[in-house]
Length: 604
Image (cartoon, rainbow, N blue to C red; front, top):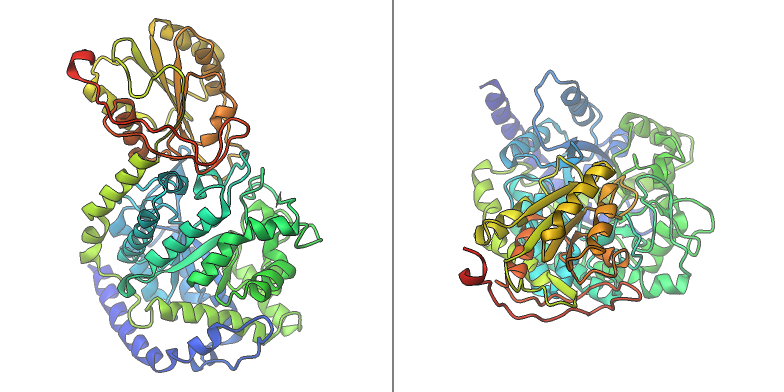
């Protein structure tokens, strides 16, 4: 009851603040588009109301979570300190990791927590999240959109525009106002361990068109306006390293960067993207010093601001990542990021140290006050565009309607169905010619994962006696060999391989025992149809399989689509948005009409 009373008081306080700010908020816009060549634009009245320390704090975007911890929890007290006492500019709703899985927060709990934090803040907070595939990436009970590469395989620009609109609506319903999407990386390196299916594909113009469509959709409804972010500048698609673990490198020449990596970012800027996120990678063609783009004045100011003409918010990728954190202390990384041209500093390990370092840099003349003011003005203008000076709170009564719209669920499943891509089928295993002798093998990354449950359930509804074999990466070799031996009675095997793209993983190969199991199946007596639910490049490792298909996603909607394709309930029409040299070209994909397995040949 006490929290409810406090929350009501916070709303009343917010109304007073909104009335106060509205009279001066209009002046913020004038300073939002300060370019690198004119950082001395006069401060707005709202900006003049902030001390130097408060202005610096507005640049800091701290790590948060979507759940609502108890008031006596150390994490809660620390978080409130950052917002109420330090006056940071906002926070990102990150995902908690449990048993190797990202846990999505309940929507009402997330919205209540964000409302509470907005009430603690002197200036409205930017609240961000990585919503590359809709709210489901961070919010429970929301439609499970597949990864971006699945949208690329479906070749449906209208669906991407709808995804942008859906993401904006979902985000605003739970209090999020800044979306770290779309991914503008061109994934042209099959060994890329961190972008991969997060990208729309390998063709620069196709990625640019998709990025533009997402932005257009996210901005189409003023009531659901969110700030959208193209990432990871100047392009993380041609790397074989994970910048969460180390400083990644793009070795391409400047001309190739112009013709490939920068194409989607130019399109995003033209379409009115609100923010661009930097990448922690070295690009010798653009910055001769071996430092990440996040800390490069030549890249952020020289290329992004001056050459590409971007006037919005430049936000760093997470400063806790080793691509930066392994090189500099939190404070020094913050100072160098601002010197390079960044406006918002995301997820520093020590926010207070960053504020202290930036204040000291201004006081000692290393960074000018005008430089700080230019960044703060862009951030305040972003808050104004998101309507945070009208109201910073979200209406809890509207959450269910916004998150559970049937049309969004239908869109997610339709895209998953249309993205299923078959590039090889030497023995006509799609659709399943007969249930007799068919077997399902699920290759799961760990024994805690729920991967494969939806696929198995959907298949068993039609084929109750379908043999199922589950192997996970941590199994010992003798057990893997024994399970493979049990499949010798199968006449055809459908092997579903889950390889998710995750921070810190370091590669996208089949892990541990899964590789050996797949080798045993591939060289066994039964033809194998390998279905990749995740990394689509697995055909390079198993070229001798009888059939190969990709869903470009490990979401449950993609599992359901795979089951329907195997059973012949949907036509197979996806086309590869990437190449797998020398086996597959962009645009490859077999067209297979629907031909459902009938009761007479399904054993029912």
